Image (cartoon, rainbow, N blue to C red; front, side, top):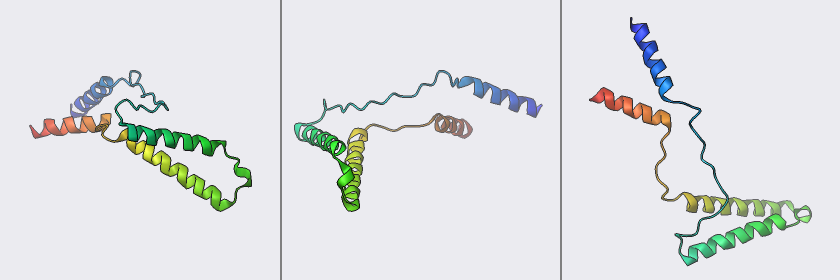
Length: 109
């Protein structure tokens, strides 16, 4: 009897989450500057221009240390851009974390 209730409970939980309806969030490369002040938007535009300039460079004639410096600069610009884009965005919880939280709340009360 215990096996049957455990199986039924797991089947019900599996049927509650329909993976076909879960959709991934689409990301875009467009930087939103509507809520930024002019200084910050100028920094973003300058970093975008610098990244485009680095892409357009002919790196075949550069030394190893120059290439390494460019890679570090690109990583720093991308890290700063990610920080700007995601700062204050909110808290993200996975479906599994939400289920665990709900089960813990049910066990407590």
